[in-house]
Image (cartoon, rainbow, N blue to C red; front, side, top):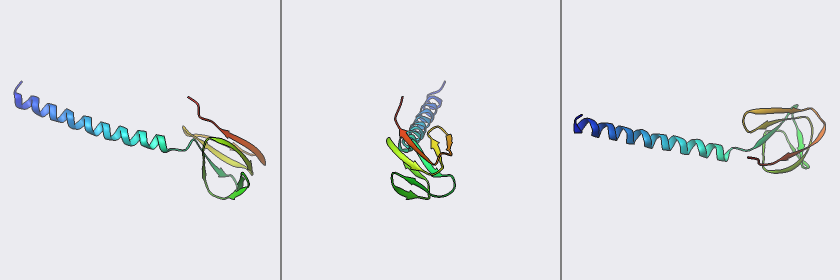
Length: 95
């Protein structure tokens, strides 16, 4: 193998490594900033801890009281449809 070929191979692998590092950084940053749970009204408005909302809201870690049928979108593309007029939601962080 010639020195020129080895040098080109080295620079190509270095460029590929930098691109993989940038992609990984962007992916991990998006995962870190994603909310654990988002809530949305099934038929319009819902009441969350005494405040009326009509759009999708992210829920942080804590306990919430919800009045109205709602759709809960959990992290990991899981969806829970709650058709109970009044319910409590507790968002916790688990491994």
